Amino acid sequence: MTGKRFVLALLVVFNGLWLKAQTDSSVFTLQQLLWYVEQYHPVSIQSQIVVSQGESGVRKARGNFDPYLFAGLDQKYYDDKEYYSLLGTGLKVPTWYGIELKTGFDQNRGYNLNPQNIVPDDGLWYAGISVPVGKGLVIDKRRAELKQAKLYAQSTKAEQEKMMLSLYFDAVKKYWDWVAAYNEYQVYKEAVELAQIRLRAIKGSHEFGDRSAIDTLEAHIVVQNRQLSKKGAKLKYDNVTLELSNYLWFENGVPLNISEEMHPPVYAAANKADGISSDSLNILLNNLGFSHPDMQLMDYKLASLEIDRKLKRESFKPKLNLNYNFLNEAHGGNVFQSYSINNYKWGFNFSMPVFLREERGAYQQAKFKIQDAEIKQSQKLLELQNKLLKYYNTQTALSEQVELYADVVKNYNRMLDAERQRFESGESSLFLVNTRENYMIDARLKMISLLAKYNVSIVGVGYAAGIPIFKSED
Image (cartoon, rainbow, N blue to C red; front, side, top):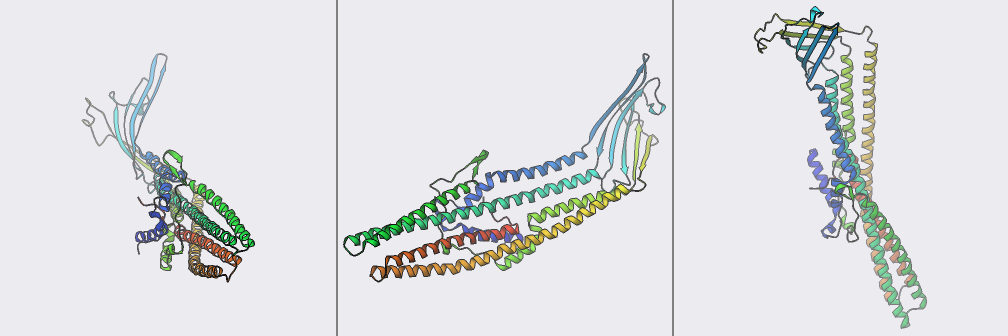
């Protein structure tokens, strides 16, 4: 299975978590939340700025290869005489291969002009080339900076993906906390309603002499206790709603709040989505070394360090630059009228440190940095593999717990129904009915918690693998 098709498969799994209830327009779905997060959340905007910074860095590094104009004027006047006037203008064009092209114009005059600066009265044009045949032939600082800037620009995309992965995962976890809190509140609402219905029925039975006063008191206490639990669940739901609102933003940095008309879906064990299979896990583990943003960032760092190492190795070579310029005098504005291959100026520059201690030390430091980065990369890969396995193990265990506890809830429900029938026929007590009902409430609450944790664990597998499965659809 290719990487792209595998991501699509994960998206199908994740879409299963958006539940049937999202057909209700008042239900605020996970898809809607992620759309707002992707479009307007400050971290999402910051991640885009990171990418723009990388692009501006490339533009800055390209500036080292921009042609540039130069001009210089040096004059001396003494005792009402012009000793000399030296005027030089021109254009230099750096190239990718270290070669520098140059053209210019010199016009010099004066009584005390140095003979080597004597040029024709109309000035002297020249054009030439400077070639590094030693240090700087293979790579130089300008080329190294541009290559590293391009790597940094690519790494900012991985950095953006890493930022968004964390943001999406945090939003997803908070969303399922919100769903769980809402469903817990619904359980307590139903529990209060059942207790109130039973209280009214027992009061009626008491008036006809079928129930004792103590049964009425017990039923009333149950209502009060459940109302207290309901208020606590409502407080928890309201607070989690506020926490979820931290992920909701709109244009121009305007924060949004979830209105009272909007609510999460109501779910049950039937809504359980399929988790990541063992075959899919193996694919994720095999791709982890190059698909996870953390590993991509380390690859870019190693590539940048390798460029620096090559640059340091280049410094072992002697600096030897060859320069050649042809010379020509303009006649009547025609630069090429008197061109001759015999009119030229050439030379070379040579320099080399004797002991190369600075160069050898810098090269060794560059190699040590690479070795250190490779060790950290291996360590990071192991950490990511174990993190992925941890989320997968959690998903597998929770999946089994959800399936097991679904049967537990059904069995509690059967026991409660049977106890109610016995109570209505006079074979049971109100205490036993309330006890069975409390067990049923606790079971439903635990089931809600297990489902929320299970849904988070599925997303956690993708998060640990560095797969952007949380991105909302357009």
